[in-house]
Length: 405
Image (cartoon, rainbow, N blue to C red; front, side):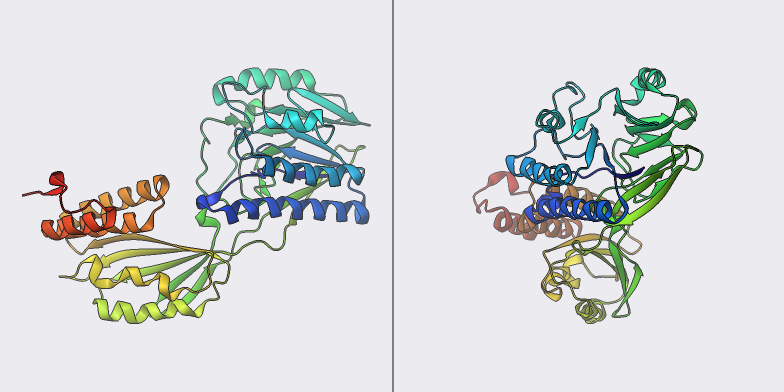
């Protein structure tokens, strides 16, 4: 029996606040559907498992619903059954019963499993969904009662303790289950970790990962050194798994299926090593060596400024102008003055405020105004900082509370 296993589709996710990224997540899902239908024709895929986080939130938009309907309708028309469990994004903790997957189930496009199972000959597929760590005992008890005498494939959306994930993941502690508490006589089609084809070292459990890039550490990464760009890693693979289930032996052979296409996600690390601004600006010209067309680009400027120079002397605001054709360029500053404890502390505050403002406001002009003002304040140039804030925030010169002495 051949089973396609995917997870963490996150339909509706507007990553970085960009509608284009929401479209990317939809296209990744539809590319996976195309690949599965092709595998059906070539090798006879019988079933599709979606082990949680089909949607990015429990209240998807109509257009997000339509994408899911389009993809699952194609699978139904190709004679492929689809079993889905909920993940932590699909339903609220307060009311996990009412969730968007039940709508797809009621329309006949998928079968929603929540502490239930479906038998396919000697293969039993069990779905136990997603449970907080403090409810895991109840979940494991229910799982043991659902196990059959043949081949058991368990769908769950959890971090199984010990899986060697590389990148930071939200809610790891909240949705963790120790591997030793799970029955050994089953294969676990797990979701929640976004790294493609991540295997657990002691349990028969493999994560297909997300269908789209989730974290900047998964980006294609380059370092600018001496005015030249050097690639240090390619973009992480994304895709799903093909499970070849031998009903006689109970063995499950796992084959990663990598999705092709998708948007390039690029990170460029620019080091500042105390060189004067003129040298640094000259070296920045090396950024133009890459093809950035339609890519999302993050530029991380890190290191120490030269003695006697401030952030504005280095012209970091010119970085975006050197990157042409990108979907969006996000410049992150993590620099400090060499040997200055005061500057080090100010830098930490700058980084904190930059992160908060970018997430809550997303207005680069406002963010840059605040950062420039903080830099001036650290130099003791309070009046200039006030002027920068007035212009950047559109407050006008009559705002008395900004007139510090």
